[in-house]
Length: 238
Image (cartoon, rainbow, N blue to C red; front, side):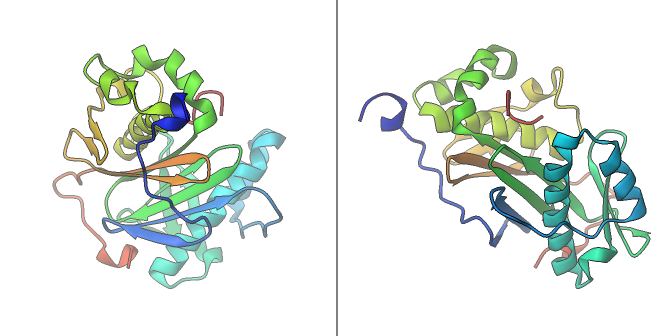
């Protein structure tokens, strides 16, 4: 083989449809093809859904379905009692039975072919990016990657390129920062295999079919409680 297909970072495979656990987090990714049962939505969630463009509604609902499943499993409550709504900064807050759960952190990501959700006792970010988006990532690489980070992806092929993007996007989500502007550039990428980020973050990367999935756990700020019982920007053009 020649070209990008001959050089791969060798990220471990992640089986869609199963709950995986890493570093205290629970992670679930599924394929978007095929029928699914819409999640039970609260009145507030239905208002958010109805305000979305028609083309966004199915992926939004699928993401909530996964997040509700993870929270329901972790807290032993019916998914219908779980509410997942966006904060003003775009991060997600969890309410169970009308009670806010500030120590339960969730994150959701979508591509055209997959949906993923993650749950953790610390701030968490998950991001999906298909290898087909590698060319689009390269076009914005100078705005996202520092000169010191470019060699990490230069010889790694499509998976390395999209992994770098996904790691930065997941870190921004965990930090509750905007995916636009300078925030991704502020996430320091120190390594890809294994993934290492600056700022006391823990990170992991997997491969699900033709998609790379990055999970980032941010260090909890002083004074923020931990709930040990809670776990036992889209790709460019995507």
